[in-house]
Image (cartoon, rainbow, N blue to C red; front, top):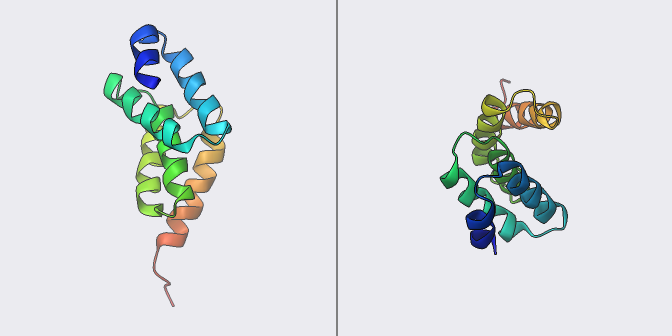
Length: 102
């Protein structure tokens, strides 16, 4: 389904990001991940696919890869409405990933 959407709406990046958001918000994680990958292939300068990949990786416990994708999202979309929340989560993950200094 995401392939058809990409072909039909490939010039409307906002529509595709909205569709990906809807997929994620309805718990369709596999579809969200697939669409994020498709969007990155279509335009690697879109920030939101990286945010969703980070959220999915974070949920699955893959914190280091989540950090990478969150950082990419924030680099590409520093002023996005979701940026403050993602920045906060990223900071938490970075602190948790550091070895204890004791």
